[in-house]
View 1 (cartoon, rainbow, N blue to C red):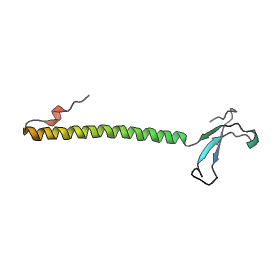
View 2: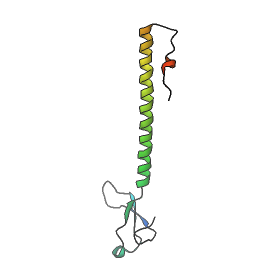
View 3: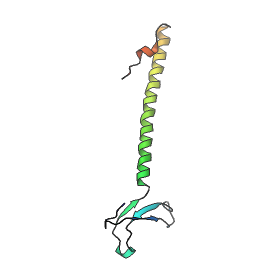
View 4: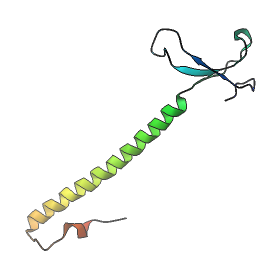
Length: 95
């Protein structure tokens, strides 16, 4: 990772007490009085990756719930019709 000076950024760990203590970030590697204002949390990409994975899981769960609801509906229709020959799976639209 490069800072705005086009130098390899250094990893710094937050030492100040608070919610970010121990968290790492990238900063300019120059001495403090010469540093550019480059800043990026080191875990940002990991957090984004986890959020994408969580969203993917949520989408899968929505699909599973839709299938479950359709099966419940088909079971109810089967109970109402009283016809054991009817196969509820035949009514499931597979796209």
